Image 1 (cartoon, helix red, strand yellow):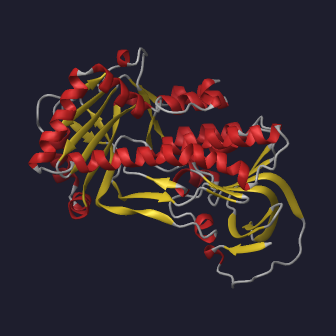
Image 2 (image 1 turned 180 degrees about the vertical axis):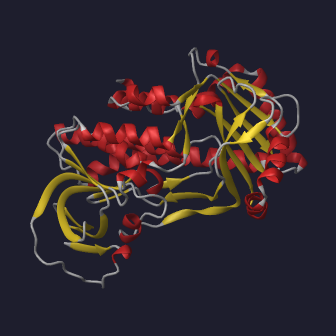
Image 3 (image 1 turned 90 degrees about the horizontal axis):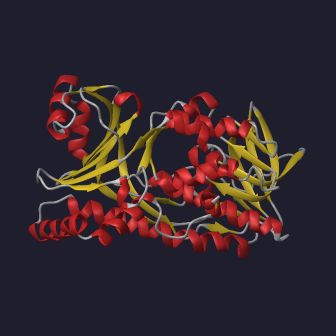
Length: 420
C-alpha cells in the first residue's frame, strides 16, 4: 500500500495513525463546493455508498458571494440529477447575449432563435445553488455529508484507499474504493498524489461585485471587451447585475482602493448607459486569473474534478460549468462500471473518464485563452482579425450557431444525465 501524506496534515512523513474503527464507502468525495456536492447528488441512484467530506461548516459553505454563469448543458445535467426544479426559481434566466469590442458601435447579438430555443443560459448566486444541492443530499439515503472535516492523510492501496481526517476534535478513518478530489485549484489531494499541472498566471485580476441599475436589465448578458480586459455583466434576480471587471493587476488593485464615489464614477463610464445609472449593491472582491490543466485526471483509486483538475480564464463564464460536465461524465462512467461489476477505482475504468473530459476541457481552456488575448490589446493586426471574426458572427449563421453551441455547452459529447 502506497502512502501519500497530505501537506495539510502537519504530520511527519510516514505517520501511522493508531488503529480505529473504519467506515466503508464506495466513493469518498473531498470538497463540498458546488462541483463536489453535484457529484454526490449525481450518484444518488447509482447503487454506490458515497461520503462527502467538506472542510467548512454548512453555514460557511453556502454563504460565499460568488456568482456563476450557468450554461444550458449544466441546466440539463442538474435537471437529469433531479435538483434543477428546486434551484431554477431562485436564479435568473437570460435570453440574449451582447458581445462588443471596445467602444465600437457594431455588437454581436446572440438570441434564443439562433438555437431554436427560448433561452440562452442562467445566472446563479452561490447560496441558492449550493443550498439546493445540499438539501438534495440530505434526502439521499446513500450519501453521507460530513462537515468541518479536515483531511489529513490518504493512503492508496491496491483495493481501497484509507482516508484519515479530523472531525470535532477527533481523528477518524474511512475506507473507499475511490477518492474524488473536488477541493479546488490548489487541491491538497492532487498535490499529495504527485499529479503535476501546466499553465500560467495571467497579467490580469478580476474585480467582481453586484450593482442595482436604474432600468431593467431585460435578462441580457453582456461581454464588453476592452484593451485592458473583458467587462462582463450578468443579470441577476431582483433587477440586480453581477459585474466581473478584468484588468491588469495594478489597475485592478487601484480599482479596489478607490472610495465608493470615485469607483462608481469609473464604473458608470465602463458600464455604459443601457440601464441608466447604476448603484453598488455589494462589496468589491478581487481575485487573480490563472489557466491550469492537470497532466492527468486519474490515478488508481483517485479522480480529479472541477478546479482540482483544471482552471480557465473567467471570460465566457465557463469554469464552474466545466466542473459540472466532469461530474456528469464521471458519474456515468462509475455507474456503468458498477452495473457491469467492474472495480470503480481501477485505472482502466477511470481512464474512460479522463479520455472523455481532458480533451474537451483543454478545448475550452484554449478557447477562453485565445478570446482574452485576442481582445485584450490594441495591436492593429489583432484588431483587424477580431473585427473579421465579429463580422463572421454577425453575418454567417453557421459560424454564429457553432460559437453559441460551444458557449452553451451543447457542442461535444452529451452525457446521459443531460439526455435524461
